Image (cartoon, rainbow, N blue to C red; front, side, top):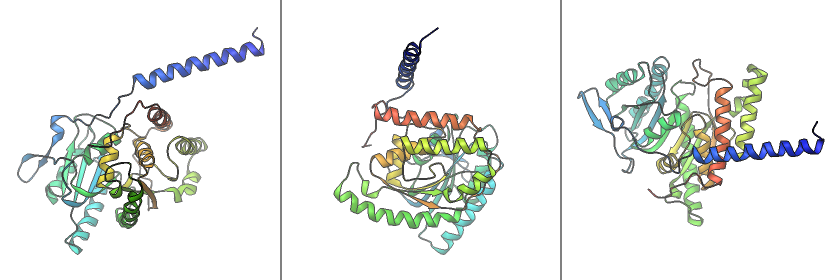
Length: 334
């Protein structure tokens, strides 16, 4: 029988072996820079009016519309029409009141097996391809990867990404815009003192937040799911992002400069990509704020309880570890 001291040394040895194996896994499975390439088919969108394929603009071009709305969608043929109807109703009414307000919506079909692209193309046909475009990915990349390609295909001065489920109220965009305009003023002044990346004075992010609804959501969740949620928030706070209570809300507004810089450097393409973005933003001193929005639980979530939370927890640990060890590199110029 092992003595207490021998047991301690045995457990310490197991822990060291586990740590070494984990570090090897961390290095072996990581790519130094994110892959910004795309399949040839992903370079084009279909124009229903001309019945032809057209090339998406290059992300390095100057913006030509005021707002780009990115809608990542995976098997969303049922929920997408409801969300799009609300969004287009708001955007069209706003443009009717203010002719200087221009916009585009890019629906990014993340390798769906249903009619998601076809649903998007119906809206493109109704409103025109200048306002609604469908980017159909060659294979599933994950929500973060879908948003990234949408942003790299965008024309907007400001860029909003919003979930396809319609859980958020689209008119809350005005709250985010008001806050973003304030942040841009602060960012310009801050950049005069310290500028760590090009165009930092033009970079800002406003996150829609459901944190004010947390007490109500806890009341309707099981004890186990509540434990997972609170544990996730703690790990995010401990390792990556502080000062943002709700990192995962799918309603975030970026200046174009911030969106391109952050999504070009983002390494995580699945559920935890928001944490990756906000970690990078805080690392470079890009201003981030949080605004409470109206939000409703919608059936049909793509997250798998427990498993998705565990994947996200793993990714958060890897985010901190890989950036800290220099395994993941960051480009400050493009």
